Each structure stands twice: as C-alpha cells, then as structure tokens.
Image (cartoon, protein in one colour):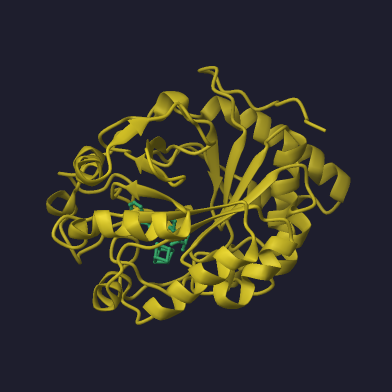
Length: 333
Ligand code: SAM
Ligand code: SF4
C-alpha cells in the first residue's frame, strides 16, 4: 500500500527520501571525511536505536518511500541488525551506504532483513592507496565484503567513489572495469567541503564530474539516460554493459531544484539541506514526551512543519573556509 505523501516544501518539492545517520563512529578515517583524530559524540547525545526507529516509522507514515541508513559506518553500530530488521518491515525501500568492512559477515543477514539495495564505497583498487585514503589497512576486507554482497542476492549494488586529483583520478577506468566485471553500478562523487580537514587542499584535489566522465567516455562511450533513482546521481549507460555510471556533482551541477530528501543526524537533528544549517531538533521532542502515541503524533506534526524550513539551495565554495563545520560522518553522507 502506498501512503499519500504529506511532506511537500514551500518550493513544491516532494520529500520522499530520508537519510538516517545511525552513528558518527567509523572503523575508517577517510581523508575527505574525517580528521585522523576524531572525538565522537557521547552516547547520551546519540539517538537510541528505538528513537531512530520511531523517526523512520514517522517518516514512513507521512509517505516517505525510501530510507537510507548511513553514518559514520552504519554497520559498526551495536545492535544495528535489529533496527534494520524492524525498519525492513515498514512500507519503504530500505537501503544502506557502507564502507563494506562488515559485509563479509553481515551481507546475508541484511538481505534476509529486507535490504534490497546497498551502496559500497570504494575509491581505489590499490591496497597501498587504500591505506592512504582511508588511513586503515582493510582493502582485502572490503573486497571480501563486496564479494559477499554480490553472492548475497541484493537487487542492486552500487559502488561510490570520491575522486581526488593526484590521488586516485588515474583509477577511474579501472574502477569502472571492476564494476562492469561484477555487474555493479558505480557513481563518482565530487568532494564536498564538509568539516575542516588539513590532510589535503580541497580546491587542489577537486576533480569535476565532467572530467571524470570524459575519462570514462574515452574508454566506454557513454549515453545519458533519463533514469532517475531517488538519489542525486545523473546516470549514463555503456553500450555493452548493464552497469550504470552515475555522477554526483554538488559543485558543478546544482541539484537543489530536484532535491527530494532530508537527513537526520545521529543526534536527531533533522537537516533540511546538506549545505545549510536549517534544522529541527527531533531528539528533544522524542525525549520530552513519555507517551508513545502522543510522541508519534508530535513527531509527525514536527516533520510536516519542518518543510517550511527547507532552503531553496545550497552554496558550496571550495576556495573559502567551509561554511559547514559538520563533518560528513556526523551529517550522514
Ligand atoms: N561509512 C559509509 C561509507 O563510507 O559509505 C557511509 C557514510 S559516508 C559519509 C557516505 C558517503 O559519503 C561515502 O560514499 C563517502 O565516500 C562520501 N563522503 C564522505 N565525505 C565526503 C566529502 N567530503 N565529499 C564527498 N563525499 C564524501
Ligand atoms: Fe567512515 Fe564512510 Fe567517512 Fe570513510 S566516508 S571515514 S568509511 S564514514
């Protein structure tokens, strides 16, 4: 049964896709996402699994049809499988973005819990580079995770690769080949200026989607498709493969006008836009009302009211200090 959508913002955009961050913690320290030394949130500031479930269920009642669990690394949160099993019973498509490290042991359970699609991040096929980019020596574990996911029977698996100039831009075609060989989709992501990092200069490392697309096109001519998933990727196809090539381009192609999503941070802040601070505190609301039914009604009203806060667009600027001091792991990428 499809529930009529009740979340429409003042620019007429229909919000039917929610990204829930289930933890700010991670077993990796990717150079574009985190600092090497990170301080994570104290437990009491993080939504409990029950609270996350209540938020997900409220969105589903309001007609949202896609929930993505992300983080941090969602699969390192203790008890996450029980949350996934519960969310998997809602009338929504449940998807996960993961770094792949836990998939060798969890892929089958995720499929059994109703997860149909999964995004796995992979920026390089070179173990040494992997260590530089993630600051962890877990390349083999991630490849084993991707293999386990391929065997587990997800409907669709997509790789996500952030391309940085001088770091991994020479691997674009190799990553496409890796995806083609396994029948996976792959999206290339432009780095976004979230959080203050000192490991590299984001402006120097910036590699536009147009440049990446030209590299792929030189090897495999690409045809643009009108296919839209709920996400921000623009998709292309190759003549001789089922794999789709996506580009997520927050800088070069502003996708705000078609934005259909909101995020909930691990602290329960509803973020109406990735590049702005417009938000609503759901944690306080959740913790202020002990009665479950009343809480559910309050939550629904707050989510509907929050639509008026969604800004028209974001303004990322590589040359200046990040306007957004949140790190990607806290935001829920
Ligand atoms: N840990 C999981 C993972 O890595 O897939 C989920 C969370 S991660 C924040 C989600 C996605 O955001 C990953 O594909 C990652 O590469 C991407 N990401 C992280 N920081 C980014 C940044 N500054 N700019 C663009 N993408 C970023
Ligand atoms: Fe962890 Fe994902 Fe951020 Fe990498 S991108 S540090 S795997 S949360």
